[in-house]
Length: 445
Image (cartoon, rainbow, N blue to C red; front, side, top):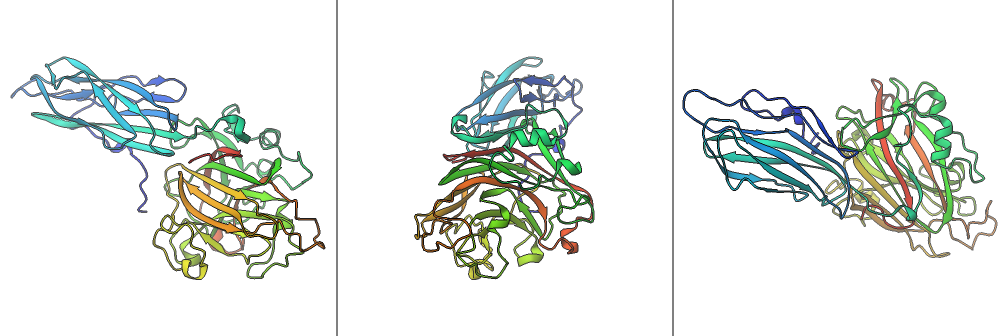
């Protein structure tokens, strides 16, 4: 896997044995890890030895446009003065200031203040590096999460799981969190009934707190009792335009099924929006839409595991993968785009990513609706779509001239063909979700 997966603090090693110090917690979700210093050499040739009060600094979640500061201590535990030749960070989100003045006598210390101002959404990581004349280079792992600064009053749905107890995610909590069955739709709620959804601590220890975990069980695709996964419909007031965002984490050893279906905005019910793959829908019978997000395995299209697309169910389109692409997000020639992997988006494993989707309804009879997708704030899909507003088909099952966006289809599903062994995981495996937001304004950009 070639995706960057952040800093593994277990691989940060000193050149001599470490001192130990208690873990310090800063605020609700920022922390300073154990000491990564060195015992030094107090015999033979005098030499300086750099030691830090910690080897790991985690700032937790910081809103875009805001910043946070954490101070750590640099000590010269060697038996000669330390002349600092370099003290620096690399990633623009992290900066440092210090009062060391380039010189630390033996047995003395100084303070290094680190500031985290996220330059982008999602996980950010860096190394604070310090070296000195005659001293081995020492590093401190820096981590933080850039989060949206959108005000909550713009949200019609906001679920972060922080107020829930760890353990099984109850159906009553789920219904309350996601406004299930507050509209006329009575789709089944699947997940809690099969012990497939839990509230757990963040597996990446990124400072985000509690998250939702879903299991997909060994040897099963689909949504049966044995398979796991989840599906339910989140309800909210109908509108012509919405932004929908959530965080997704798949572990470093996560196995990609042939098709992995993800949550997405919807109008109406899933059944109303469905039409057969490869068949152009009849406009007078399609009364809803969904813009489902989906990850594919390399077996599907030869584009590599975890290639991202949107599968659009609307009244004018044959089902086909709208490929996410960082170079050509506006490409609509799917027969060409299918084989063009330059710039394609591959979901990384072992790190949190933030997905955002925008859907805007079209003017009646005009294909000026919008479907856009951002990954960690980067636009990867952008094109016009004709969703529903169409007054030329009065015989529709339900009038679609005034149908609007009114829900999220919450989906964690392995299939298509659930009997295909390529949709049946070889072992139990988990995905993790956090921070579901539906807003009438942009969330990550």
